[in-house]
Length: 126
Image: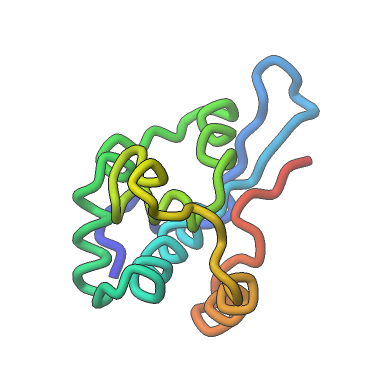
């Protein structure tokens, strides 16, 4: 399902260059697959269409994650928000599309994580 090698791994450690005691583990594979799952569940896409949409999005094409600070940029929004941005485009909330988590989202996400063997947390800061 994941053809791009950048998204095939979890447990990728990043260390803040300014303060080496600050680290984050980015579960990149789980992040990518969670976005696909959201596009399927809440965007009414097939798995194939969701994957194609995500792979062709600016979010994935421009994915740059080589430093701690770059990871922090991806962590500042919920996965749901990123998926809605891919699905509906920039400033989607100005067109009346909510970026708020839908009712039942947390339960769905936990079930999706378990069913697909994903990391429980996308970002693990220490």
